[in-house]
Image (cartoon, rainbow, N blue to C red; front, side, top):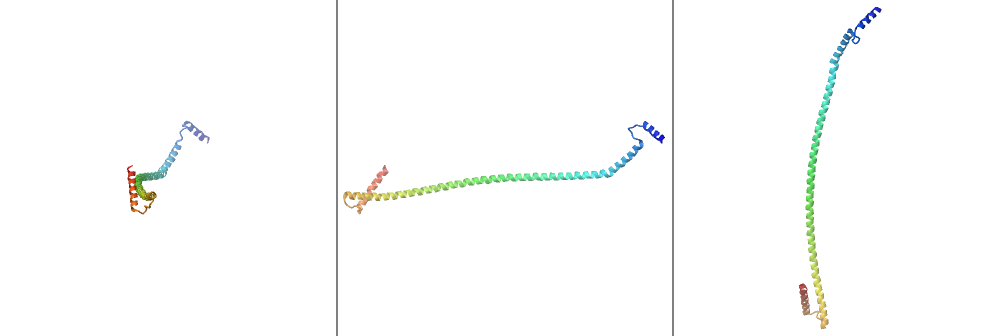
Length: 182
């Protein structure tokens, strides 16, 4: 056994210590080739299939996300258009309400002015009627006072005499004409 050991030591001393022996390289290449073929035929196709399935799933999700984003953009555009339409409609309604309010206000002012004019005319008529009644009552009383005064002066009763009444009325008419001239 010593000789084999010495022989082995001599061959190893002359060989490169960084390179393995030829049988090790050969068997390592066989094992490596076998593993490479196994991975190439069994593992790599499954790995590619899984990667392709994941890629398709990701692409499908991206497509769904793009569709959802497009739908959201479309809905947003529709909502914005509806809001713009609602704003213009609201502005039209407000403007219409303002116009109606102004028209109603004008009608109310006109009605109030007419009512005030009617009330003023009514008050003027009532005042004129009361003035005429007061003038008539005043004439009657002034006539009565004038007759009483004349009776006292003449010492006679002129109350029932038609001549006295017409004379008093004429006197009052003259007084009225004089007051209108002044």
